[in-house]
Length: 353
Image (cartoon, rainbow, N blue to C red; front, side, top):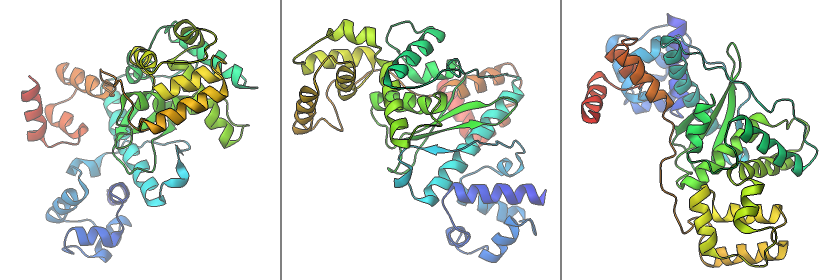
């Protein structure tokens, strides 16, 4: 018991980005740094009052410290890793692990087998053209045909990719990893603090999917980024769709035309222009001119023609409420899996009803 509590306490502290002294300061030194150190080493256990203080300071429920579901993650790959401080990286990893532990526990309680099979695992990459072909192959395997993807997050969850959202600093957009279980399960984490526009969230999610599925072991980091960008663009706006909407050769593009395509395919205007250049529909000089125009108009961060609809993970909540209605879990267990108090969860249920 002491060792389990010790590991969970350290994880919660790292999740919050705190040192032992930071945690002691947060609870007004009502528990000393030395005592906290003993708890984390499994040399002592807090009394109920101290446990309450720790829960409040760390934003967790008491049952958090008793959860034995352990999530073993593979290599963690951050996008824009060099800009993310080490303490923030550790916090993000522990928060990811905590959310996934509740996710896996819920699946086990609901007796759900969420096995993932990579449909493009036996492919090879010799150049950008191979990325286009791989994206087409994945679209076919996932029955997307040549049409627009209405909801990228829903599509990923339907195909057994776990997507979770967290709020973090401005230093990274997302990350991807694998859960090591009976079979590996892919995970994509999206930073909602950075990904405020739906088109950017959609593109980032598919970029991370590229890192998960494409055989990138033998290519440089710079080339891997290029391939994943191409993959995301090809998934959102396939070659045949691009040639249908834009034609095979253009000397000019209209911002209003691109705005309509953006709303139809859920891809940013800037990504459409890049796709047009990569597919040789427009020249490099016109691409450069268009991006200069976008910068002058102040559209690089916030583009015109906003996307409608939702792009949020729903599978966890759907499985939670299904398990609750089938009496596989109690109301109190559902609240714990949501990391909410019983009264908070009950209010949420009544409000939703």
